[in-house]
Length: 554
Image (cartoon, rainbow, N blue to C red; front, side, top):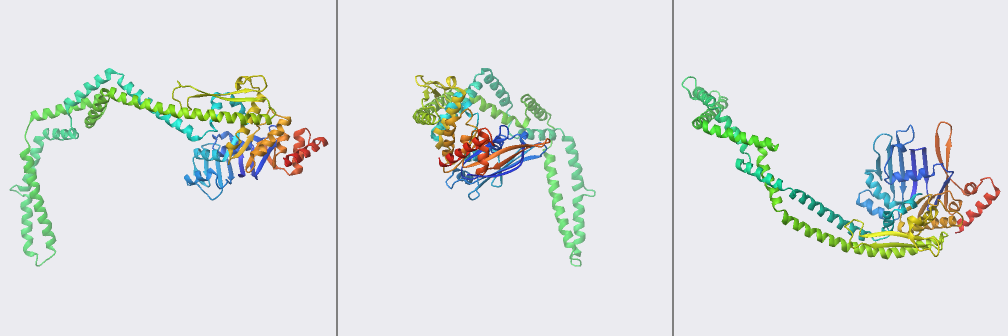
């Protein structure tokens, strides 16, 4: 149940707080008073696309909050638990719409994405708009209307297998696009031959650069090593000899000064390090030799690697991986036929699976179409079209291409008068007939909205007289054991309501505001009399009282 709705700075509503009870509630008021603004505000809380133009003029943001109290077994509780958003027995939705920036949303005080708001909203509320009947002329809308009464699992199997088929088709198209260029395979072979001729191994380029620097600096290295060895081992002031001399001078005095032991340890370490450094320099010096041929070979190999790297727009160290990648690509092209056969087999299997599921969906549609047509005809009779005939025609196409909606063409056929065969709804129904037909479908599918708050926004447009009474009775039934609301201009519909609110637009010359009043019986009599023609008319008021009494008794 929807328990409360709070609106701040939304279009021409400055501040509004409403509380709701069980049953059927009617929202009435003059044309243009702003009745549908309440529905618009609730739609925003249910995840409809936000729009900064909905923020009141001069305000920095609109702030909307709704509190729901779903039944204990309502599917919203399971969804909330799955999303870790459960909060005892109530559900609080909040959304802000900044005048400049993205909207924000919360469920039970926790920030959520608008998509989550939309998912939960679909479980809580069902809105039927005033122009809903106009959508019935579209074949897709007619199919979707029938599908709402099917087992969702049957529809999901068709969608899933169609999606798998689409993926395989895309893979096959990509494979054919790659293999459809003979010149590409030839180019790959040429490129691989160049790379394999170079044969650069992983890490080799860096090693070649180091070797090039060493071979190109033999004279400098030799001279530096000789100078270093002279300093370490030479006859004049050699570092090693001086360290040993320092140790000999200090050793006899360690008994007199124990702290000299630490200095002697460091000198001993220095002597070892000097000897190790000298041995390393000797080894390096022995390995150094002029090798112009090797230097030329290294430089040529480096130059070739750099040339190929520029050609392929990679760095030289990346050439080994490039060679591996090109090899895999060429192997895939050369193995195209084998891979294509595998994909074609998988595609045929996927199509066969889809056709089996599509056939099951078609059977389900045909069975449901008969039941829904019968219920719709019964509902239309209640709305004054007792001679109307309705057929949901389901035509399977055995040659249909794979599609997520199945293989059927669904069309609603309609006849309003006896003696006329049912024909396409879009071609023969008048605007008023379409409106009543839409109402009939809503009545026929009334149980589809179980557990949801049901909202009807001027769905009674184009009806009147006894039909309007029938609409009122239906809306009262739709709220039985739950809750339903209707924005209406018809007194017959409003009189059937358990609660009624009047929307009033107020203007002071500078601004426009909307006020919503909950009406008691006296207020309802006045409002119904206005809707009948005149709030001051004795006849209208007497009629209004009679309608209220009749509505309460129905």
